[in-house]
Length: 78
Image 1 (cartoon, rainbow, N blue to C red):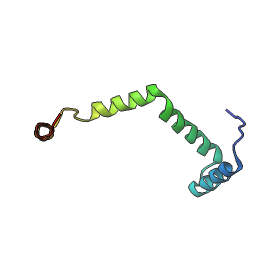
Image 2: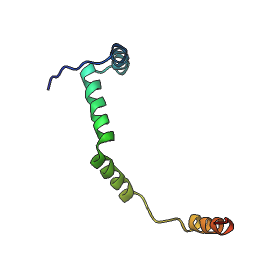
Image 3: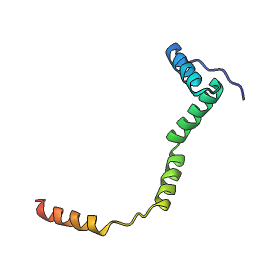
Image 4: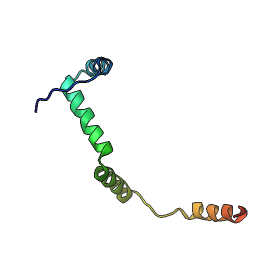
């Protein structure tokens, strides 16, 4: 899909430099940037990513850390 956008000159020049440095077409750089922006700002996508991480790691509390936290909390005045 072709589209036309307006961006500040400074941003355009920075994108041009990055595109040349990465040796990739400018359109690919813009497409990747928009995809990353959407992924970071779509609440459902963020939740899905966090859920994938939680499934991949052990979310059980470490017994040693829990014990240390209890000892610390006993010494703190509430």
